[in-house]
Image (cartoon, rainbow, N blue to C red):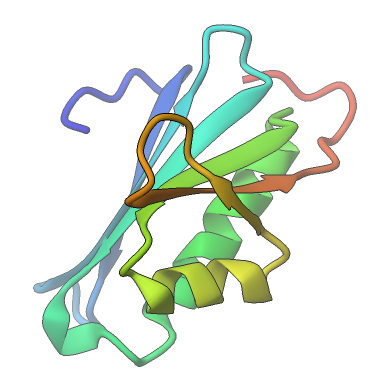
Length: 118
Protein backbone atom coordinates (compact mmCIF):
# COMPACT_ATOMS: atom_id res chain seq x y z
CA UNK A 1 0.00 0.00 0.00
CA UNK A 2 2.97 2.31 -0.10
CA UNK A 3 3.61 2.39 -3.86
CA UNK A 4 1.15 4.35 -6.00
CA UNK A 5 1.66 4.48 -9.76
CA UNK A 6 -1.71 6.10 -10.69
CA UNK A 7 -2.35 3.43 -13.33
CA UNK A 8 -2.77 0.21 -11.40
CA UNK A 9 -2.77 1.67 -7.90
CA UNK A 10 -4.30 4.78 -6.43
CA UNK A 11 -4.48 6.12 -2.90
CA UNK A 12 -7.23 8.35 -1.54
CA UNK A 13 -6.72 10.43 1.60
CA UNK A 14 -9.36 12.09 3.76
CA UNK A 15 -8.36 14.98 5.99
CA UNK A 16 -10.30 16.66 8.77
CA UNK A 17 -11.58 20.15 8.18
CA UNK A 18 -8.59 22.44 7.98
CA UNK A 19 -6.44 19.72 6.45
CA UNK A 20 -4.26 19.08 9.48
CA UNK A 21 -5.41 15.63 10.63
CA UNK A 22 -5.51 12.54 8.42
CA UNK A 23 -8.90 10.91 8.99
CA UNK A 24 -8.90 7.97 6.55
CA UNK A 25 -7.10 6.35 3.66
CA UNK A 26 -8.21 4.06 0.86
CA UNK A 27 -6.02 2.09 -1.54
CA UNK A 28 -7.34 0.86 -4.89
CA UNK A 29 -5.20 -1.75 -6.66
CA UNK A 30 -6.09 -3.15 -10.11
CA UNK A 31 -5.20 -6.60 -11.33
CA UNK A 32 -2.95 -6.76 -14.46
CA UNK A 33 -5.95 -6.85 -16.84
CA UNK A 34 -7.42 -3.76 -15.19
CA UNK A 35 -10.88 -5.32 -15.04
CA UNK A 36 -10.81 -6.13 -11.33
CA UNK A 37 -9.52 -4.19 -8.34
CA UNK A 38 -9.22 -4.54 -4.61
CA UNK A 39 -10.02 -1.76 -2.18
CA UNK A 40 -8.72 -1.41 1.37
CA UNK A 41 -9.89 1.32 3.74
CA UNK A 42 -8.52 2.45 7.08
CA UNK A 43 -10.26 5.03 9.29
CA UNK A 44 -8.69 6.72 12.33
CA UNK A 45 -10.40 5.49 15.53
CA UNK A 46 -11.60 9.01 16.43
CA UNK A 47 -13.59 9.19 13.18
CA UNK A 48 -15.27 5.77 13.14
CA UNK A 49 -19.07 5.58 13.22
CA UNK A 50 -19.32 9.00 11.56
CA UNK A 51 -19.93 7.89 7.97
CA UNK A 52 -16.35 8.38 6.80
CA UNK A 53 -15.84 4.75 5.68
CA UNK A 54 -19.28 4.73 4.00
CA UNK A 55 -18.55 7.86 1.94
CA UNK A 56 -14.99 6.83 1.15
CA UNK A 57 -16.09 3.41 -0.11
CA UNK A 58 -18.82 5.06 -2.21
CA UNK A 59 -16.28 7.52 -3.65
CA UNK A 60 -13.73 4.81 -4.49
CA UNK A 61 -16.41 2.58 -6.07
CA UNK A 62 -17.58 5.49 -8.25
CA UNK A 63 -13.97 6.24 -9.22
CA UNK A 64 -13.36 2.57 -10.07
CA UNK A 65 -16.53 2.38 -12.16
CA UNK A 66 -15.66 5.59 -14.05
CA UNK A 67 -12.21 4.17 -14.80
CA UNK A 68 -13.32 0.90 -16.36
CA UNK A 69 -13.11 -1.49 -13.42
CA UNK A 70 -15.79 -4.18 -13.64
CA UNK A 71 -15.37 -5.94 -10.28
CA UNK A 72 -14.41 -4.28 -7.01
CA UNK A 73 -13.31 -6.57 -4.17
CA UNK A 74 -12.34 -6.41 -0.55
CA UNK A 75 -10.99 -9.09 1.76
CA UNK A 76 -12.33 -8.92 5.30
CA UNK A 77 -11.91 -10.88 8.49
CA UNK A 78 -15.13 -12.73 9.30
CA UNK A 79 -14.97 -10.94 12.65
CA UNK A 80 -15.18 -7.49 11.02
CA UNK A 81 -18.98 -7.40 11.01
CA UNK A 82 -19.20 -3.61 10.71
CA UNK A 83 -17.15 -3.48 7.50
CA UNK A 84 -19.00 -6.42 5.97
CA UNK A 85 -22.37 -4.83 6.75
CA UNK A 86 -21.25 -1.46 5.35
CA UNK A 87 -20.16 -3.14 2.11
CA UNK A 88 -23.40 -5.13 1.87
CA UNK A 89 -25.39 -1.91 2.25
CA UNK A 90 -23.57 -0.60 -0.83
CA UNK A 91 -24.38 -3.67 -2.95
CA UNK A 92 -21.36 -5.86 -2.26
CA UNK A 93 -21.85 -9.62 -1.89
CA UNK A 94 -19.96 -11.76 0.63
CA UNK A 95 -18.44 -15.05 -0.50
CA UNK A 96 -16.18 -17.56 1.24
CA UNK A 97 -12.50 -16.78 0.78
CA UNK A 98 -10.65 -19.68 -0.85
CA UNK A 99 -8.34 -21.60 1.48
CA UNK A 100 -8.95 -19.43 4.56
CA UNK A 101 -12.20 -19.82 6.52
CA UNK A 102 -11.35 -16.81 8.73
CA UNK A 103 -11.70 -14.43 5.75
CA UNK A 104 -14.56 -13.31 3.52
CA UNK A 105 -14.29 -12.08 -0.08
CA UNK A 106 -16.58 -9.12 -0.62
CA UNK A 107 -17.23 -8.08 -4.21
CA UNK A 108 -19.43 -5.88 -6.33
CA UNK A 109 -19.98 -5.87 -10.07
CA UNK A 110 -19.68 -2.37 -11.45
CA UNK A 111 -20.95 -0.88 -14.70
CA UNK A 112 -17.86 0.83 -16.05
CA UNK A 113 -18.21 3.88 -18.23
CA UNK A 114 -17.36 3.18 -21.86
CA UNK A 115 -14.42 4.89 -23.44
CA UNK A 116 -12.61 5.86 -20.27
CA UNK A 117 -9.20 4.36 -19.72
CA UNK A 118 -6.81 5.01 -16.91
